[in-house]
Length: 366
Image (cartoon, rainbow, N blue to C red):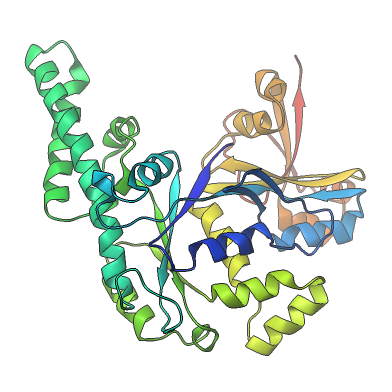
């Protein structure tokens, strides 16, 4: 699908350490792949315990998970919107992503220099917010000037609607607000898609803490939570240095023992990958057979033909019907034949909205 989450943050906040942990994340099964497209783009497998369960039932030749792309974006400094540091590169790269993983330093360590001389995640967040808002304001002002002419001419019916939206955006940005906080109608959302504004992108805040703060957090984490509570954004607490130690362990058993010692059920990296997947509004359906159990990615709200097209475009073009088994039914009955016999296999048409966890078989004719 080509959807990407970009990891952003100030220099020395643990951003690259976290990206390297993601890049080296080891799944439970040896046939779960990882590959690198470019030095700063990782295709990361999405942890999903349902695959393990289906594997135990079906014993296929291979198990293939779904993936999400994570991009390590150049560190930002104050003044990036005016070209300071690698500002232009940063802003260009973030514009190409679909969602943001914002890493913030939430640990004290005199041996690791902070770019601003002290640890203050709220201030760090505001630095990046301000730079993105300034850039968005430039974009909005330019579009307003263009839309005003079109709206006056009356030749473009959508120009007035877009102008009204842009004026609301300008007001929000002048008040120091990120545009994701502006509520939109469905019609306005369609207009917004062509603008590619930086502060409209959904975000996860990742608090990079020391090992002692993994479970209970600290004053820096609490300060950030208070700051973002009105944004509706998820806040994850991760110790990037600890995650890097986990990533170096060779076996699942070793990693499980390490996590048990820390009082954790799973790694922070696994939580982050799943959160990034959800942030992109992605869901998973499965195909199951003796040769392969496979997870497939689709957009929330997709109908059966669109999901079929994820496997192959011919499946969507020649879609006839979908045979659907709910995950829980398959796990309870252990086979497609048993589900069919019990009346748990549904025959669905073009209007069926695919649900997360559906086990699907498509009938098509091209």
